[in-house]
Length: 608
Ligand code: F6R
Image (cartoon, rainbow, N blue to C red; front, side, top):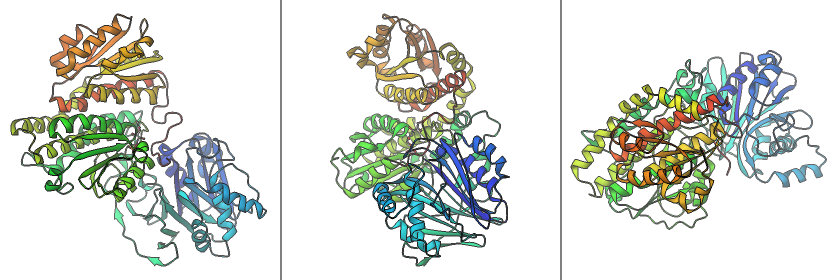
């Protein structure tokens, strides 16, 4: 949700900022802009549309001389995408320029105060208000002006600020939005995340809320809101540039689908030793025994992981699990006490709704466990305990490898909880664990056999409406299959519990409606097939997704079929999600969609 980056050093800033913005574009791509201090004044170049437009307008940065500057890529909130609403925003006198990620909730009253004092505004944004406010308090010291102004801001913000009168300084400050600073031999940076600077340095510092960083050529200093200087640790990021590059693939999404076997292996390995799952570092065994309920709060695909986890944890451990959309958790008056565990699942670790759900859970006295992919992210930092998924940077807006690693972690939790609660026979436990360890290999097999999925995508890419049906975990997985298709191919689709379709929605099924029946769960396959026959009787064309051993049975009913290797039922979604991801990918490819950056979306949703 908006990416910001800043650089000051010995090199020309603009090309470095444009490169950083290219790596942050997944956070928003409605418009982009840079502001460069040329030593005398601040020059701003900005443009509506993708970063490529800005690159052309600034001649790859060559048209903007100067060694210090800030940049922004936008996901519009206040004011539609336009040149005027693009960042950076400058104060009326051109002295202050800022970039902003977040939402300033009290911008209207601040704007009114500034207008009453004669300030004139050019945009509809909340950000311009912050620029004018900083300038209003400017009295020859940009650090003091920023610290004074942010005391009046309500909402969420990560700000990067430059001042024409102080050509060696960038000030960064954050509250409820991510901000890092980074160090290199050729200069120093601030950015929304590590991705923006990874080609220059792996040495970073994560800022906490309300801390202020002053970034200069020769070093970075940190301050409290009241300007007492503080010391902060440097960290070394443990992945390299290839993790953030396409490495020859046409799309990040495809690369990330292919990375899933390794990502799952990396994620589960640290928690398995001597044939047992050991999560005691994050979940005390005695505490787990006393659990009366688990809540899972998450959004989008991470929520879909929660829906599968509910089935699996309840099945194996017999502990009640409620899955709640994070945006609803705060408002559903959850019944929570000290024996309730609230698990928040998030790839980015910055999703505002999930972060707020976690805060609410803590406020109500529950223990919180976060399953997060991005180290140092807000959700990771504010949880009592964290399990990191080791998916590596996920850049395509549509999640794939983060989803798979989250799902694998929930299986670890199901097994561990089941063992702590003495709810699972040893033989069953051993079978599931050994199958979990073979998931990466079975995933590879599906990825190798993708030609059939590509062929089926070609047959169906012109459909405008389709349904996914399934029961139990197959239904939970259908939710993800449907979302994947919708978000990247813009085809309307719905996921239905197979038995529910006949209670109304079946009226939409007509000749040639495509229905994808996820029928991998052996116990309920006959039931799902009956529902498939019901839609076939109304003219639908049915594609089945099933296991090798159910292939004949399912294939006898469906018009076409995709198979996955057999595995334990708990792990079926871990395999069956791959054909759904690939199907969505190929359909979007044949439709000519912008797969990595679907319209209206952004990867990290930092607004509620
Ligand atoms: C869909 C997708 C989103 C995210 C959701 C939560 O492909 O990626 O639905 O799952 O926005 O994001 P995180 O997991 O970062 O909290």
